[in-house]
Image (cartoon, rainbow, N blue to C red):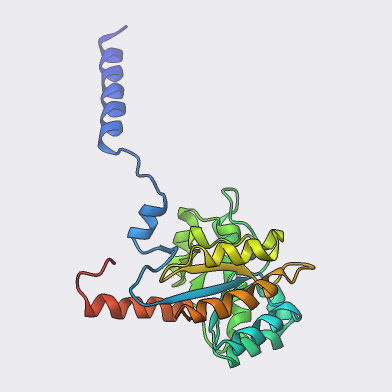
Length: 252
Ligand SMILES: [Zn+2]
């Protein structure tokens, strides 16, 4: 081996070793995104508040049944709507807004943002849904829930670029109602795990199922009896901000 080749080899070795030591990989897990405030899973707080969230709608049958129940128990909720369904059933979303609920973004076609989905597709999915939401509600939603909860660094970049915050759900409040697990499963999942600041995951559009509606007939009165207030995601987050401002030592 020539002297020149030996020097080159050493240089390559130095580069590999140095780059390995200098940049230990950052684990981009829940803690990473939660600490940076880029994704919200839940909002631990002192107040007895929680946010019910409903994905995949609107559905003219079940969403309206849910809206009737929310009205009966003076509950506010957040609907993560699918853009193409907003286009089909705008009157349901109009009712959501009129009755004080929050409408947020769940993409246009309900695309899972897995690793092979380009940033352009993500952007189009989000902004097409946003256009529908804006048309009905008159203002832009800042909350985005990617279908299936799929997220990655590229999605975060797209979300930030357009001023969205990604909102997922409390892991202990994943009712799995989309796979029709039975009314009592949904009821127990919520009632046995309720904590202040929870974000509960439900679906107002599950084909041929009214399990979520039936479960709410038990969940809403029981949690109300326990003193919980049902608020939108925006209200939950702004309440937390107020708590933090008034108590400097509150966990942020
Ligand atoms: Zn969904």
